[in-house]
Image (cartoon, rainbow, N blue to C red; front, side, top):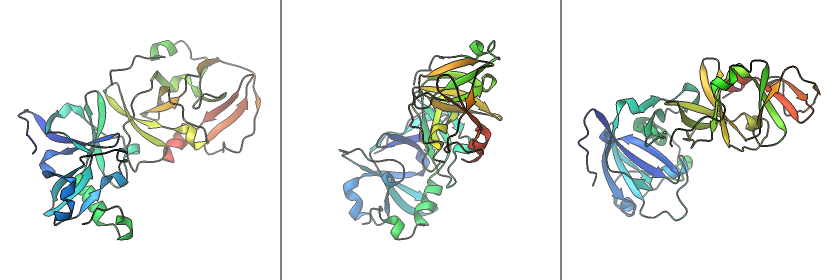
Length: 295
């Protein structure tokens, strides 16, 4: 049984988990929560969200079925753990940046819960998605803010560095991405990423930065570089902020410096301004606006 809170001026939400992924749903949509072994006795469809929104833990036990009533239709989905009803204050909700929104519309908002970002499920969109599937696609249907990080490199430290290029390695190698120092807002330790299912493969998810949900853009994957996320480089691309995963191999390169031409088929003209050989390593100047537009 769900126990409702008496919290005032807050939206009643229920948290549920699928493996390592946590989600929120408005309590008003939920009719009841049942044990998973009741699935064969239920007169409506129960869907396995683990096939789309994460993987159930290897030794998951005591699975639950969240039963909903959407536009007069009863249905349910399978999850691992379900919380009691909690009150989430209005100022804890944020709109998800457009670039991270899945086209299916499963999520529009993210909430800050215990210093972490948690995606808010849109049940009606989820209902439409599952009911629009063909029989083959429903093979998996069951029938029957961490503490706020301190800066590694702050904006104030870069103000006197306009004659330098900001270099970072995505995978810890000597292949560096180079950015104008004016693009870089801050460098912070790696944060827990809130994954957004069905978003672009280059969008790893969202992190909370200065009370804002910021998309994590994995530019290294575009060029076949392995991800070694030990830092997050907060950058400005157009009018938006993004977090770029980086290793600890970060430095400021004084300008001008000696370089030579370098050829690598992984780096095409639509994605980079140029690729250059330095005394130590390779420098790639990415076209961040183009990479964002391709998401």
